[in-house]
Image (cartoon, rainbow, N blue to C red; front, side, top):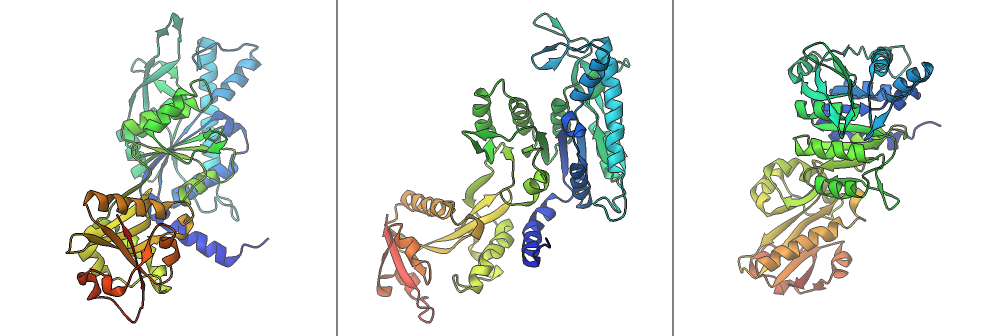
Length: 433
């Protein structure tokens, strides 16, 4: 079925802010050994697309099932303690074989460039190496983990040098000691430590399951909320990525995304659509109401322009916005302005006008308008005002449903009545505080 042109153009335009925001940023992406065993061609194509958009990619892969396959061929198994493999000598040999094979397979997939394929013309260069210095995990609760290790140091300067040379960096979950020993590492922990060392913009963990609470996808959490969820999911598959997310955010990684790898295209949907398809975790709220700054002017103009064209809002120039920016309140969602309003306090010091009230169409049925209005009401109460008022030509009913009633133009504060546009003929509504 052919793609409807208008839908494609609208989607492409909507994704452009994210394309600009992600360009030049460093993303660390973890994917499991199970992902490699499955048909991961589409995921590799998505990695290639991210690279083509100017994103600096560090890929960290797992190898657990590949190790298990080799142990099974030798009619042996590994013991586990606290979800970590006890890596004895036979298991270590399997770790080396699995890491080498998986690395080569991924490099081969990233090297594809056949005509009429998603990888055509990609020409991706992949860099691997001894970027991870490790040390033995040691003996815990009497259990000797032998060749299982933990990260001691990340050679972040060397990784940055490879990224600066326009390479994709591919990291296997093995580490090396200064004495030449090899250690088997937890891949999720490697990805976490790499993201922290690089101070990556994002750590992306491709998980086996979505992050769900009460049968509903959790779209966003702060680290505090993630800790609370972790306490109730200590022994579940989601505990490992949750722990990685909390550690990363606490040590400087701005955003961590948990994405179900089984959803085709989930990586692109998460990064280039407003609501994504996974769970975003950050140290500070992903979405917040705050006072506007000069840096927000472009976002405000983009938001209100369609409403001005429809006659819903009075046209405002960039210069006017710059002069009045201290009066503006915005809702920011992951760096994008999705709602705004202005709060103009009158000289009589008893009232304030609500102006330029706008919510992006994608969020008009999700309480953002109510949140903005509640914010302004609380601000008016703090300033001990007596009244909020608004002038409207087409959205009167929305305000009426929230307790506003009509008033005569003559009852407007003198400061505002002097500039009333009789040609526009806006209704005046007010609400006592």
